[in-house]
Length: 201
Image (cartoon, rainbow, N blue to C red):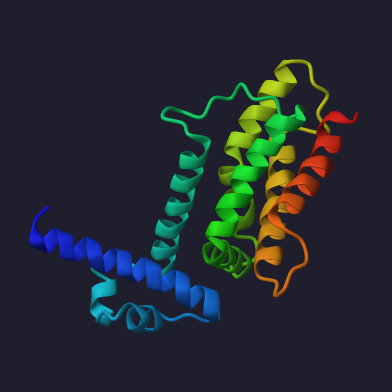
């Protein structure tokens, strides 16, 4: 890698790291691009060499979350759909991966939630994001249905409901001060709640 490319990569990484810190302190909606560049120790113009706007930067942070999830499930190919989420152990594993990523990227989760809520009414942004982010759950639920499992609803809607519960709880818990429960407790609670909904019929 040439010196120029190395410097550009360093600047981009500094901007992303600074954005995480500032989002954690001020929130996504209250953060200006100049806040990010100041925290990164970079000129404001350098931001636009890497990102068109704050939303594009946020999407880059989201990609980092998705890469971390792939790392945790240890998959080198397409995530297999042959997982039966009516099986408690398989369900818990998926929830544990999601929760771990949410905890490690709490400022990004918060920023994504704030950006989604601030979108224009009727934009459909929340639903589109839920459907996209829970596509892997939908695929597993479709597999479960094919195996004769009696799901509480259509796989797309059930997956979206699961994702909404997980993301809202992640946002609320991770932004709370002095919470009284640990990650294992949260994961087990979510697992039991969702497992009874999926397999308890």
